Length: 246
Image (tube, rainbow, N blue to C red; front, side, top):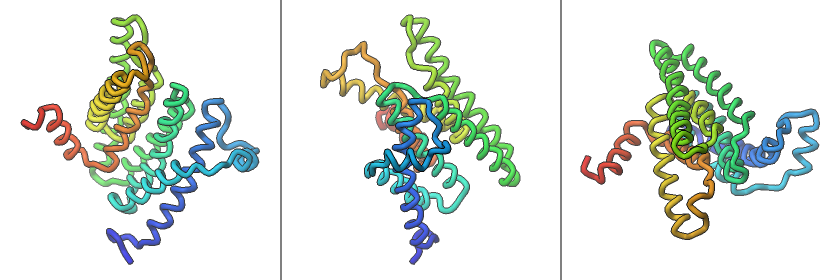
């Protein structure tokens, strides 16, 4: 049986890998904030010692992997996002819990993004150089937008508008999404943050002066372009901000 030209067994294998990766994410969530190595000589001992099934993470990653295959097929972009999605989830969880995005995680994202940028530059005949330029600009635009906001916010308010971890995180994401998607991700992350902040303030769960981590909003905004094409996403945002008049 085939679904979108892929044998159903391919989806089953992707789902099983997703379950395993989801469990591994929990291990990373506990190690990275403590600045401990992920792959050490005692990896299996430590992993098994603290291995308690995290069914929510396992199901989320499994569904994400199966969806990637369904929408993109067996492509280099599918492989790229199969590696990126677990890192996004790790960033979401750690920033939500501790209000930090570990430098080790961001650096790994940079490394993976650069590797895939160069691979696609070499493999794609004719358009490879365009991908390289687009991703490099994505890194500059993604990090630049948030750096500008951080500096301006700090000058006006006398304190950081957002952490430099967010700036580095956005720069790393630019290597995966390109410059236009990074603008869309920035817009969506602020839109989601505004909506959630209003809901939280109305519910009086936080005071207006309390810090709300921004990383989770970036992560949610970054997941969307993986499954929604840039033209469709741009159209939807224009509809929203023009109140349906576009």
